[in-house]
Length: 602
Image (cartoon, rainbow, N blue to C red):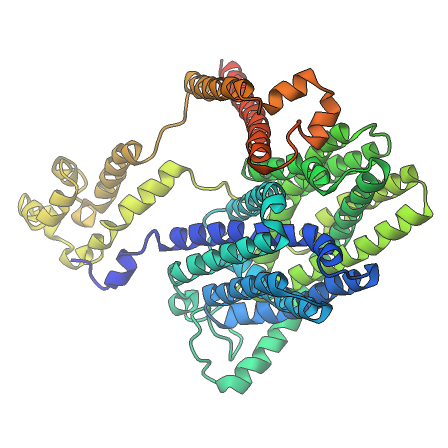
């Protein structure tokens, strides 16, 4: 019934999509601990272990140094072996690192945990990005989805960590992060295995001898040949990507510099504590998680180089605006602008690296990640020197000038690699549903040409094609309308497409109308109002404190609850306020877009 096509191939139309989905979930569970560690490790090292500033610097440098060294190696491993195993190994090492921090009693144990975390991060993130790139040819929005998942995990972990750290302490936060990383490892291991593209095309592009596909099949020339080929392939990929890697170093230097400048400014000029600083950065992280996929639509419409230039201008405007920002509330609003810029830039960089790397995506992602860390290191050093040796205004304007340089460097790097400036639009949900529904019947057309002339003999071929008629009921009249073609295949294909199109709405929800969007917002607002009234009655409403007390002080320091369960409830109400505001803005933007589209069509 299905000709020469293996049965396994007909059962896995959704396997690559499931592989991507589980990888995205794993990225969310691991990026939260990753970002949280960067934030609380210096505090924990000083408070719990009593380390000096120099020892804290060594602790952070150990993790970064090992990560820079290990990432190109992780790229080679991701090309040689099954990528989900490489990523799961990294997630397990991440969990071991978190457990090591929780159990550490001295500096040596903390350094060992940092070393394990550096290697684990290299294996995890290089392999995760390589897995995500596997569907880039059929869906150009895979990297925006990855960034959205990472940033969602980041801000959720920030909120949970900052709220719970007073109750469970640093050790409790570390153990919770270890559990999240183990869950991510389980998700990666449960993902479907990748179908080796070399098995379909007779070898990868370039066909480097000794290299294997991601399935981990043994290289025909033995381990020695495979290792030599892997090293040679890494160098070739590095030379091919050199223009983009230099651009990545520039942009990451700018991002790291402005982030560290802002952190030091909030702590020293406004005397903010750790939780208050996290709340300033929170809106930008939420904006990145929400906007990444939506901004990809503009990339498809206007092209990568234009969006990169616009993002550089927006980020430079943010950096320059910091010089005259009067308070942390304005800074938080400006940080949203920076978050939107990076939500556009980072997926473009990763997609360009993946496309230019060809079959060696793991190697490409390895050197890309190393360039990211190198830029972060240079940016940290630059920010420290600027903050100590220059006026705050001069420091901000210098960072803005560096970011503006990226408006020239990064688009030129993209053009030099020869990749497409305008990526193809991602498939619509209806198209994906049709593809998944249509994959199963398609193999039945394989053996049809063997019975070539039969359709022209009258009604007999229709009886012979009973399986097709049962698979696509109601198409028999159309089969006889194209006698020149064997078995009327073009007409049957169109009939199959129309049949799948009719079944698609049953599987995919149609786009929501303006009335539905407003109705959902109204329900959300009604539930929010009821809960806020109850919180006001028991004296736990952050919104009431915001109105009745000093607004800026409540925004930064919270309401009147000091600690315990009452503080957790009040902080939850505070987060809900921001979620509702985001829902209002999103629904308003969607309704405005619908109105503009309707006006344009009229």
